[in-house]
Amino acid sequence: MRRTIAITFGSLAIGVIAITAVASWQAAFDDAFFASRESSPAPAYWTPSNATVEVRCWLDCADTARVTVASGRVSAFADKSGFSNNAAQATVNYRPAWGTNGPGNEYAMTFDGSNDRLEIADHASLQFSTSNFAVWVVGTFASSSVWCEVISKDYFGFEIFSADGTTNWSSRIASYMGGAVAATQQAWKLNGYVTNQWGLLSLQRQGASHQQVYVDGVAGEKSATNLSSVSRVGKDINIGKRTGATPGDPFKGSIAEVVVTFGSFAEGEREKFEGYLAHKWGLEANLPAEHPYKEAWPTQ
Image (cartoon, rainbow, N blue to C red; front, top):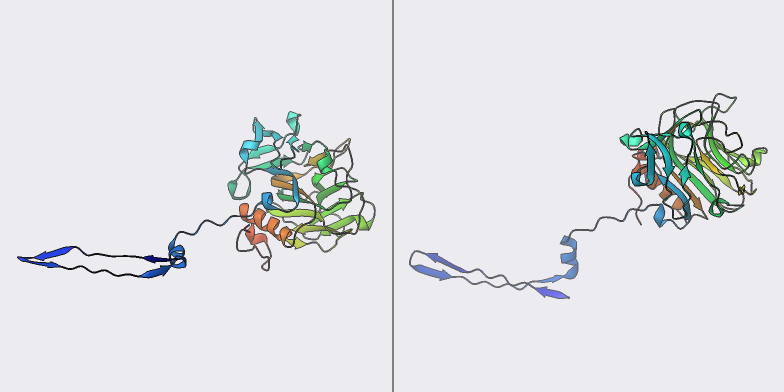
């Protein structure tokens, strides 16, 4: 399509002499010319809602309307995944604190390293059996305790924890899956955290019998090849302490976001999750230099 623009200059009078100047130009411009001068729409940023994997649980402290706070402590946290896997704590003394101590002074939950925990009731959507899944956490450790459980679904389901102070386990982010007996059930990242420094933690099973821990977009030194079921029917997911009749290994630190997904990642999707979490919480400096979303939030 071509457009015509006509420009006319009116009369110009100087003293008693009237000079009428009329000039008309016709200029053709391609639509692309006009489009290039129009305001570009804002980029559509990628979020877990755009993932090809199913988001089965999503607790986002930035979405404050979903958090129920009583006397400065979190009593309930509404899941935004659509699966209604809500977290709650009925016992007042076990509730994590709520405040603006997250990255960039945003809201986050803080666990006391003693009794604090949130519980997510077991549901069929959280029984992954031997299928692919992933757990993402934005958090920080305030303690270098020997065992410090971030999130777990029973000792024989899955868990992410830190291990510090024992032989060869210093600052280790580790995971067990399907029972913590054999080496095939363990994966870890050495020097995986610095106390009081926010980071991105992830436990993933992607592909036939492959389990991996990632910290700030970097894979751990040891992966695992266990393909045991992690369903643990009837066992709740605990955030802040190991699930069990007597929950143990309490987590001392803070959490800003938890995302649990089911299914196999599309190519590059793991990196999109990392880019989303890093840029959202101002942690992009933690990502390795070669990360595809080191400099910019992923787009759709």
